[in-house]
Image (tube, rainbow, N blue to C red; front, side, top):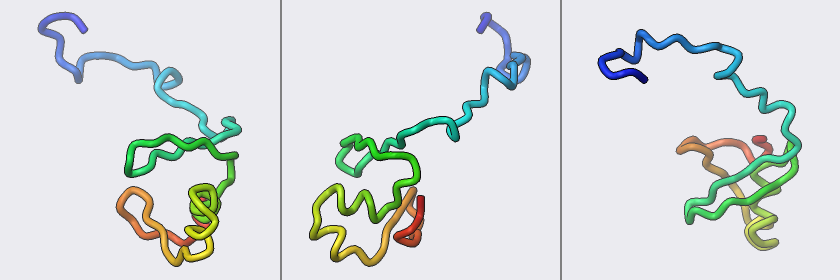
Length: 75
């Protein structure tokens, strides 16, 4: 950015800004403790619960993603 240039005046190439996440083979989960977990594409929140511990998966009844409650089958 050049001094005095407004953000609105900067031109962006749309193709450079977009990332096609559909091509990724893995997903990355950030836990509330700051840990990063890698799971295969298509994994659900229930898969993550079982990854944490079998008893967590066995007792899971609800899940929150980005402060929203989602079904256990949410991908």
